[in-house]
Image (cartoon, rainbow, N blue to C red; front, top):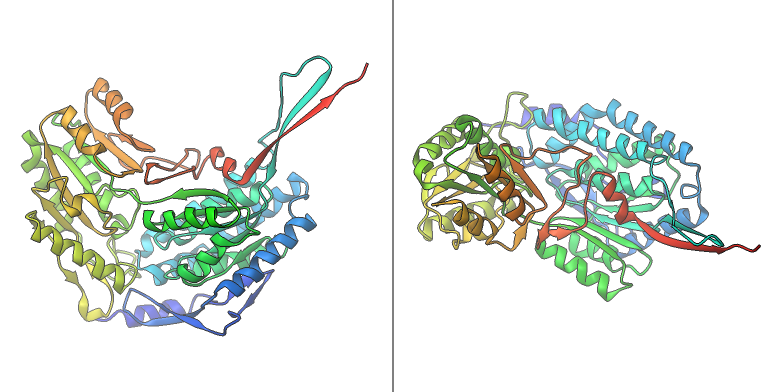
Length: 497
């Protein structure tokens, strides 16, 4: 089987630019070096990315600093900033199909998802923060009668953002939209596995009227470009979404340099708990499957630990397995495909390695477990379920970032809470129960930044997103995200009689 024809057809309809976007223009890496951009759909090279390094980061940060100090964006009236961000959102919406194709080509998720969810959510995010620009007020303090105290928000300055490949433009928009709304200048370092949509979006922002130097995009390897950005002495804040291991490096780089502000959204090993009084077994089984198989498991909130009460475990797992067995990996560019590719060969091999580890440690393979569509040249792994998993097994402890469910049995509520919280992570958790008391107890007991009751991944742009423990700190989405990109200043004015 080959998908080459579909890839070739898609490439004819998109604008591919792999150069860095700095100070309002595309430019190659100073070294002249490039990186291959390989589509996971069929393993073919579709573009070359600028392999930016410390020199390119220096240029981008200088452009961001110059734009910030000049005040072309920072000092612009709120109403004018709002108009430009709304125009940017309109540009994104007008190019939604192209951006969706770029994301599917770049990282292999089904085109049905990028068209119906990913890109529309990007547009929504930019519009939300555009609307917030003139809706968030400063404060007056309760000062004495002979003084006036003001608490004002000011932009941090130059923001560095290192973003992941699983939702390339959506995760980026969660950073750049609130950062721009609060008057900062931004340097984005997208994941080298999926940079195309962010580069295209930067050009659209310029077309919408965003001043030069305010939004810069520097592709390149994390160990070079990302590290240089986090270490840069003229970057005021660094925000990151990705693995916990890299998040720790980012935090260290901030400490080694100028003590820049840091916000991290890192990994997860989220528990989805199904009690025997679950109100809808079919809905819960469907949610349990899609909590892991959506985006091929490449989601930080994936409910990869499926905790099921022993009295219903066997019957419930049969329902989940039935959903998995109906999911055949297919061409991500086919509108009917629901389950696509993993982002690259490295990630595919990592996932297959965890599956081998699960077998070696004694978990029972219920379904899946193999590479799929190998003849296409792409990177596909079957939806996989393990039963009989102990929470101490590797597949229950480490973030796999692939379509692998680890099913764990439990006896009662207290045991479920103990297992659920027995992890270094704390990004998300969920419980299915008909008992409102159980639901409230779980919501208070689970150590996670997002807790869902009788659903999975219930959220929108108005609610904050982030984790506890080694899942990081700081919040994306909602008005709370603005806190990461502003400094609070107190102004005390003494009055005279």
